[in-house]
Length: 451
Image (cartoon, rainbow, N blue to C red; front, side):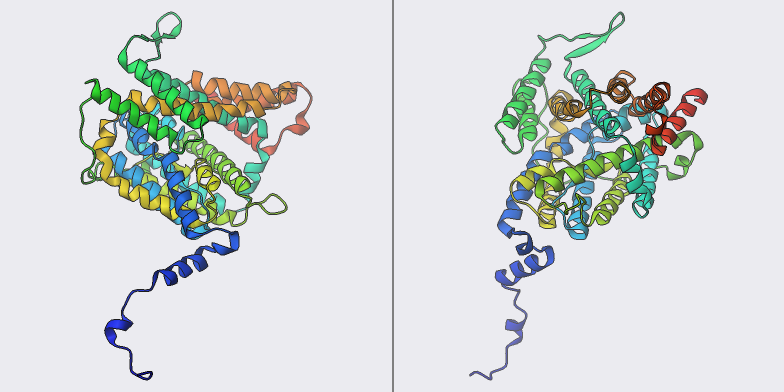
């Protein structure tokens, strides 16, 4: 009958799919931006495939700093999943986060050696830089600092980090080797591992040229499977329960990071993270058509707070600086416009926790092609430098060259800023020296004098 009461079993039935879809639409504003659940799911898959390489590459890099491979793998997946979910839910952007390439190399090959192999102290510095990033994101200082640094120096930093990654990748692949007379020389190209690395790089580049989503991860897996098939590497399996996070979880030495001598390391992390995050957010937002009429990004504060929180979260879990990923552009290309895309990526990273045996099988010469390809992408920044003005391109090129040649992101940046201020003064263009560049140059000059 029409007035018959609804039974308890009927009242407790789960919401219909249409109701759930409606809730997602309202929460993320899918209809308002012309997107749909199917589009966001497809975009999330595309983004995950393009950045999934980090769960293999990051443990391989941080392991060289003395950290437990399995724990770093778990920390990488959890940091990526949690921080990406926060970005999606809090800022509602299709932007993903994970331990940053370049920053992990700075952590493993510069910070930890300078700290006497103490990776716990290095993690403390990463956490402290995240705290400062969070504090700056709550004030106008963040926008002033990002906007004040000359664009050519920003481009030089991006290119320099790319060249640094290239050098590390070439070393890991065996393509270049040390030499007592010339410092470096060509490696033994007859070795199977070197040939596999070269083949992996060409495969990644070729697939990327064909616009194949996940080109990097396909290249890494292909080299790994070839190495196992040739008997160069043991097969540890495909899936298993996640390894223990205990070796890295909350192992950061935060108290030790509050040392005056570590100020340069912390500030370098902060500066690079600020520039990297700002460039990624603006780049992806421009591609997605999210910028307003004045070229500003709505909800920028929420996005930066999510990013700074990700850095602290990653350090607590046991990984290097977690930051926004330019690979998010792959999802945007597929139509992703809301935080639902980010949520899909987060779910994939959680599911990837069970792929630890595969990650342990991947050798360094399989991840080297990924480093080389990312390096090529970052080095394209050199083309945007203003080559018609010596006081601009010389400091930028100084940064780009000295980061890999000094094997230190901090040293390269410092020398570039010092060169920038010095050249402007000598050329009589002191009015072009902004306060931010002067402060950074002065700080690095003091470090070089008294270090």
